[in-house]
Length: 120
Image (cartoon, rainbow, N blue to C red; front, side, top):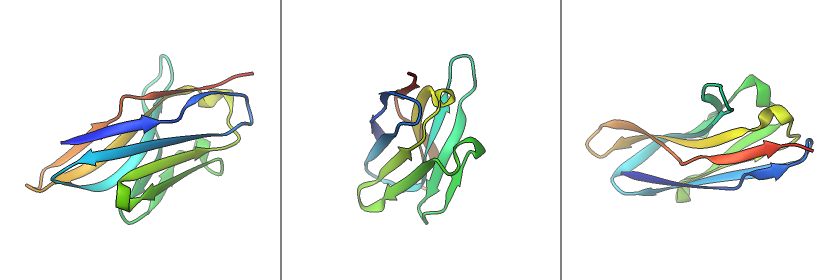
């Protein structure tokens, strides 16, 4: 079982920055990838950024050049640095973990979500 604790988020003016963090804890698993998704009201949940255990990264086109995902393997901690924020970045951001258990089963976990609001 994997537990996820998210931190960061809040209210920021357009052009500002925020940093989200997500810590994964538990036992009997290895992490294949950690990432962030977001969901705005009335819209589907979409990928923002993901980083694999090998540190390969992938970003949504809308955030390329503005957001950076990084990972601290030793602590199963992932960060999302968000710069040059725009009102359209407003959403609930969810941490996501793709894991494999000792028994070999693959499972995805979600954080509780953290609100990011970009507004003047």
